[in-house]
Amino acid sequence: MRENTLFARLRDSCAEDWEAFVTHPFVQGIQDGTLPEACFRHYLIQDYLFLIHFGRAYALAAYKGDTLEDIRAAAESLRVITDVEMRLHVAFCKDWGLSEVDMQAAPEAEENMAYTRYVLERGMAGDVLDLHVALAPCMGGYGDIGKRLSENPATKWEGNPYRPWIEMYAGEEYQEGTAHSLSAMDRLYERRAGENRIPDLIRTFQQATRLEIRFWQMGMDAAA
Image (cartoon, rainbow, N blue to C red):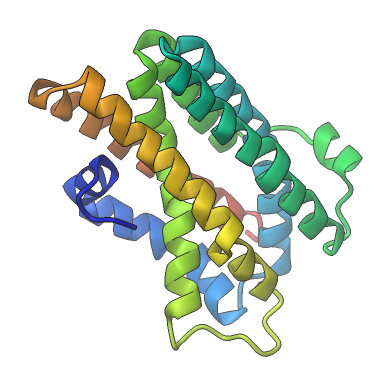
């Protein structure tokens, strides 16, 4: 990921929270294969429901866009969520004995509701840039985690049941989708923002990052 981007600036502004997100014990359990399976199954179900709401958020971004370029960028991100990430997720979940019908019928966790509704609220109350910033910790974070784990010598590969998850988010298809989404956010910032907006954007990004941390913890707590 390029470092001279709005995403990098926002990430670095809340470096402590960001590290707590991308190195959470849930992620460490994926890295070394020690995460209890009950935690991962709960996470997979909630992540399916989460992706549906993030698809809604990108549809809102298209509605909020005021240029054809903005609309196309939002539509491409929506395609990545609904056609790429959701397809990968559903296929992955089948290997864990989870059907799409069962995941659709599952109750939504409070942590899931808090995060997804926060993102949608920022999109409704603010403009399309506010919405993209609220979405950025998810797209950028999973891309960061996938890349870190794939490049870390400490990552366990042989016999790790979570290896396909790491490979999915480290893979070219997801990494390219992430880069597209973050580039669209850069273009929006260049057109719509000045330095006076940075403090508000940082607050939005930091809150969304903290909600990502709570989402991981939700998975960890499933084994309690």
